[in-house]
Image (cartoon, rainbow, N blue to C red; front, side, top):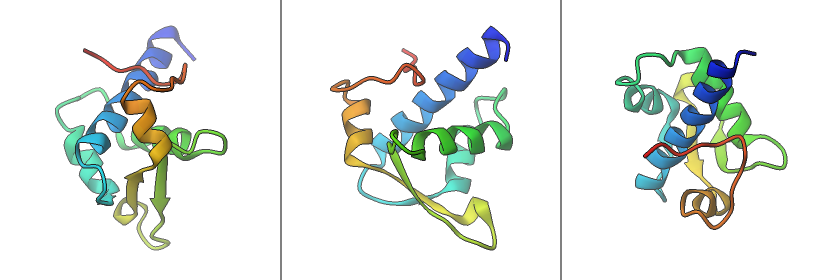
Length: 100
């Protein structure tokens, strides 16, 4: 993976955490994440799906996904308490970068 791609992936993960933090305590559909990232033209569905996979993965567990078996983008995602700690800077993850 190219250095730019890695940086882009880390920034996307940070943007997702930041947006979920702003909407904390209410699960939102993944397609809303797509809408929130619309202004970031260099992210596509595949990038967002990978980022959600990373953030919800084992030993990360920053987000919780309630999967919709029929339509992935209708699944709901919510920030976990560990994700709140990440958003507030109490913990860090080298795979997540928050842009200013």
